[in-house]
Length: 344
View 1 (cartoon, rainbow, N blue to C red):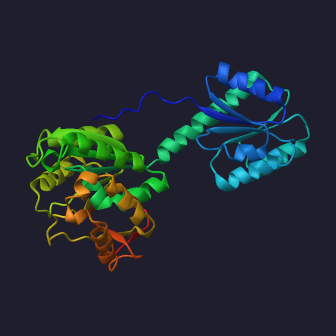
View 2: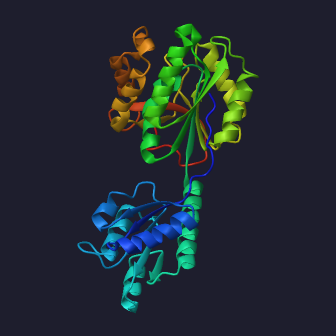
View 3: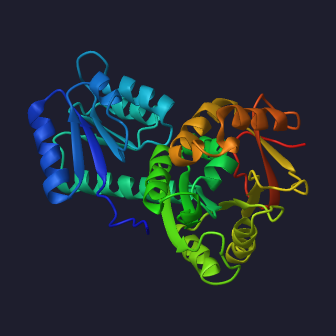
């Protein structure tokens, strides 16, 4: 299954004013003329509960209860990079000074000029989007079979998700040797949804994955599409031939990716020698929830028992921080990519 991004979403603006006519005017300008997705609030408290997904906030100053400048302070404390435009009918310079001290992106006076309002909000929204795109971190986890990456780095992927990183998972087979492919596909999708990850399910032959094409091309295609800064993949030190093949293919496909690290599978050998230990204390329960998505395997695989998963994470914590840890063989690390990392 190939994921698609689709067209870019329209800019989203949140307008705050206790004057319904003012809200209607601004909404008309930004929605009808600017093609934006516009939300409105009549007071600051409501606005604070409506900030998710907003590119630009436009707020009046004089409102009952919390003023626009007080709202600006609250927004700046919670979201330092959120663009806020302060609007007022009062021409006093004092308002402008206070707004700028509160780090408003722009200060506009009423009556608003439609063209100026549209220009300011559009420019701020585009700049915010570009900055967010430049700062985003994309993680790709590569596995031979459904549940491989969740076993190896389910806690770490949960930490990435909590940090706001973008996650993609590519699974090179649909696990036909371990159950019905339809069931295993559904299980993989359920785990990906829990992580908020994009899932790429490929059609490789279970237990017969080659090192070269189509394995190499499949991994390379996903890397070119999602452009990750970090890749997690099987270790070469593994008894399963598919795991070794995926490792070798990924090493070639990811040769330009800044950070590559190998995770432990239940079939890893004693030659698996991790050199990075990532604490997952806050995410061990989340990892168990991810693995519970793979009900067809939990029933038959001893290594998926909760006690074994927790005991393994507890064992590796002797080398890292906290009570629970996932081990990694770091092949290359050119970025500050991994959350809450402890090294031996």
